[in-house]
Every structure is written in structure tokens, then in C-alpha cells.
Length: 362
Image (cartoon, rainbow, N blue to C red):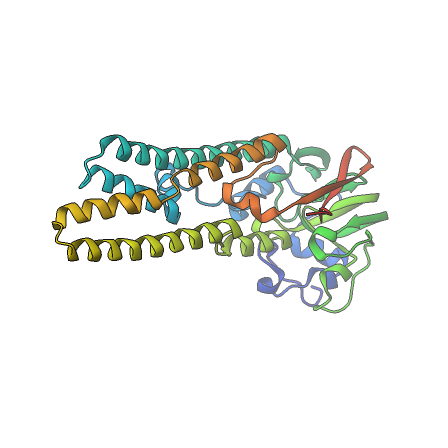
């Protein structure tokens, strides 16, 4: 057995966990380690067994937020809470049913608008995912067949050519003038020339591992064949996906500004309420009359139409520009930008890059 090669395939795990640096091994060593015949590929039975062991070649889906929780989340906004409190205060003790019901309905309108926009965004993303179905040409039982990329397993022999999206991480077995655009993963600008020759050094950076191909990168030239070494969340892009999923949500600039405005209004209204009550009580007015007048004054100081106007404008923006915006408040984070779409036709598919640039002017 060649040095550093294990008896059982370990490709479903990251190379650091498996103790195996695939790019340092020769093609025959990788095939031996994966337990696969380079000419026939995996058998259907073995592929099914590995699919049970390693799971599908997809990213782990995040836990869907219940609709009731998403609805309650709309009330985290400080202005929403202020309007809700003002509505309740109008109902009791002021007993102004018309004003109280109107304010509460405004909070419901804002919450429903935000929830509806999130629902539209989720539906749009789901529709896009159904449209973008990546297939792979894989060798199984000695025959080259085209299957959905989600059915790939470690040890599969996959053929790629110009225009393809690499469906999984793998070690190249053959390469003919093969070039791959790995800029989305490594940040490198020009396509990388690939070969089947092993690369020395276990700590070699991803961009210099010329005998490896990585999931979701684009083949821009040539053709090749590789053996799958990692799928799904075990791939390099899967690691990035996992780190992004662990990131905590941050508030947008618009949300912070509205929260600051709401707090300022609350402080001013609270000071005015205390001063008004103190002055009127000193004049000999009853507490109930003074309190009712102070609450009415505070409600009058609240810009009840602001949340509705902001929500309406933010909801109109994505629909007018045909953009997919998951959270309404996130729209302002993009700022004024121009989107440059650069497409490169190659082979059977269209590869490209989207660059977001600041738009000149105010």
C-alpha cells in the first residue's frame, strides 16, 4: 500500500479530519484510497451504499422560521412597540376607541407588509433553486451517465468540460488544457490551469492546488476527469456555507436610525409627560384628568405614519426593481449601487460574474 493511503475511504470528511491531503497523492493512490476502479467507476450498489453513508451532495438546509415567530419579529422594531403602546393607551384609559383601533391596525399593517415581503422573497429563492439544477456526467458500472449533482458520492468518477460547473470537490485524474475559474472561492482573478500531477506540500493554499477542482467553480476551458473526494457540507464551499450560517444577524443602518429616532421621541415625550403632569397637578387639577391629558399629548407627539411610510417605500422598491429582498430593512444596506453582469459563454452552459459597484453621484 502506498504511504499515507488508508484501507477505507474517508473522503466524506474534510481532509484535515481524515489526515489525508488529496492534492499530494498520485492519481493511482487516490483511486486506491477511494476504493474505486478508474475505468469502471463505482457500481450502482456501492454508490447507493455511499449515498446512505455520506448523505446527499447538498448543503444543509437551515431551520425554517415558523410564520408566527416571523410575525412577532416584526414587533421588535421600537416604533412598532411605541405605536402599539399608544394604541393600547388610547383604548384605556383615554377610551378613544377610534384612535386606539387605528393605531393597532397600523402596527398590523406594518407587520403584514414585512411578513408578505419575506414570503415573496422565500418563494422567489425557492423558484430559482428549482430552475438551477446542476447535472454531472459520472462513470458508473463502466458507463458514462448524466445524473443530478446532488446524487454524487465520494469515489464517483466525474467528467467535466468547458462551460460546466464543478459539482463536487475532487482530485483530477486527467486534464486536457483544463482551466477553472476559482475566483468565487479563492479570490484569484484569472482562471487556474489544471493538471493531473500531484502537488507537494500538505499546506499548499487552495489556489495553488492545481490537481484539485472544487464545488461551484466554473470550467472555462478544456476538459478533464476527476474522482470525487468530498461532497455537500464537507466541500470547501460547504465549509464557507457553514461559517456564514453561524454568523449572527446584524441590524441594518436604517433599523439603527429608526431605533435611535424612536428612543429620542420616547425620551422627549416622557420628559414632556412628567413636566405636564407636575405643572397641572401643581395647579390643583385631578390626577385622572392630568394623566389623560398627558397620555393624549404623548400620543400626539408620536409620528404614527412613519412606520407605514417606511414599510411601503421599502416594499415598493424591490418589486419595482425585480430584486429579491428577504428583509425589508436590508434594502437600505445596499445603498445606491450599479450592478455589472459579465457573462462568458462556454460550451453548453453560461458562466459569469456579478460585480456590485458604487453608483456615482449623491
